[in-house]
Length: 282
Length: 296
Image (cartoon, rainbow over all chains, first blue to last red; front, side, top):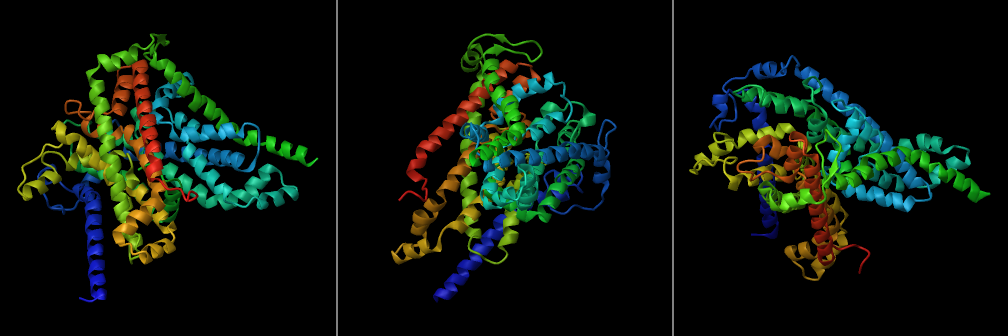
């Protein structure tokens, strides 16, 4: 066999491996989609991927939700929680990053050390005291804990990511703007922010995704069903009836992951860049 | 003149840092310090904390049978998931790195499960797929293996939860792909001229070159794994016989279900000590295998 032929076979084998493993990877997701059309009997002990018949019944039934709240309501809640949190996080992180990347001030070293150490600080250790703080502030059972953590830059990953990005922009840019009489704020908003846009967008996307997927914090801070987010509602749907109608649950799971998938396909580049530079969770 | 102008300008930094400084003090530093105090108190969350010394810790280690199981489950989960995730993501990244056609689509395919992170939807999906009459058992029956009670048997429950975590290896993969692109082609060329084969150049060029990223990923994944909560909470509720009762879940149950916030704070410190311990061990090991470009 010639070397060329050998290489060709190798190539084919590699592709085959990649495709087979890839299919195994997404099979659960495909199965989840089709399961939303299957009765419990069809789901139990069956290998067939396609349902016996297609009807959107589960989506209509599941959407009704419980306790008088439809999923439209839960989605509205999710977005009421996620959107402001994301915007506040990006804004506060950008300001902080500007402060660190472009100024020399007393205590900078110490503060930067603190920022780096919060990167490694496990959330588990902060949860109970934060809960106590938010109770003192009387903001439990609302979305304010999330807003406040966003507004006060409590997500050090994004701050760090934006600092790294800002450091990559030449300092001459703001020096010349400053000489031209721009104040620090104007330099930031007119010169640096436009250049920072892709990084801000990456940070925003990741924060949107993480906050939307997050379950632990919503579980702790939100109690009333009328304020439930999609995650909390989905979890409750497992207990809502004595016999779980899986197709309804699967249907709502599909709907729940849909915004994330759509966002991902439209903004893949920013996702990948955001992860490649910060490279965190998941 | 210039210095005074500069210092005036520089002092404005505090203005930009103000939100972060407040957040840092009130929502990071203060909670961190006060959690030590809570862990030394009888604190229900309803009344003021009452100092009781090291009682919570003594109870954890001597009286609380749950705790030992919890600690063991957490360590096991970390040891199962982190190496598997890193190896999977590295292998796939290597295969994808050859610049073949359709690589973009493949990368998307492999990354897709990671989008859903700790979301409830995929936890529920795992619950359904691995139930006694679920998809996975149907597959096993097809090849002649008897039904496995994945979440009913303490031996299989934790590995099954771990499989959900390993399934989401996408972000390390993306980072490895980015790192692999940075490895200079000249190094491979030099290795080839020196007579190194594929395998040799993988271990002598690729691994050392991307070792800082591997190191970083291992640390981040370890910190996350030690705090796992959602899958255990949704899928197994810690069972059977507490075999998946990881520390994150114990912390939630003790603190928020049974109002034992002081006790839960002690658990959170055990998580913290585990994080620090694992990190220190990794850092200590790093000088043997992590290669930074500026060293010769």
